[in-house]
Length: 231
Image (cartoon, rainbow, N blue to C red):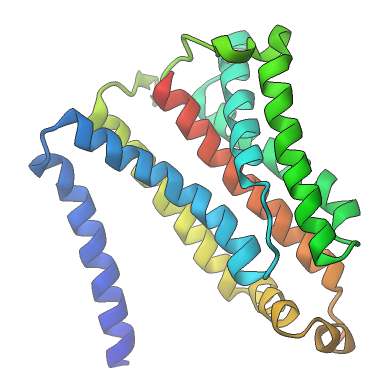
């Protein structure tokens, strides 16, 4: 009980410090660094789920990050959709692409899976730079509208810090619930002994596919936050 209380006390203290940081820090540069750190925490969760928990070396998180960024940016620029729809679509885009890549590649050996994820990332980079009709290539997509909350545009580093922090905390909460749920226990079982997991009736391919797809979702969410932040 004491350990549990200490654990929650540390978490609450860390959140309190994070909430007070913008009041103490006045430098826009330092605030920018903290915002980018929050975004990359979400991307790190994407990698941690598939590598740390599932034991699969995936080199695809940067590709999901880019897919989320371009999906969100294009929806905002061409269809003028609000930020919350953009970020949901970006997460869904990352999930769909991860599932499409995972369905065939997760039936291969672990080494082949690494090669497939690396190839997908390189292909995604090639599409982003060469499909100029969609992505404008190296010229990028300028003028991405900032996020809006209740119809109010999020302007300034402090506002962005709190918005991205709320999304990061939501992602951390989702991640924690996931790894403590039945799927999380199955993921750990598959990582430790896949043959034993199969003998226990666990569909190991499906567990790995779900893990990889959720990893793509988190990467897409991180990419959406990045696109709207840097505009």
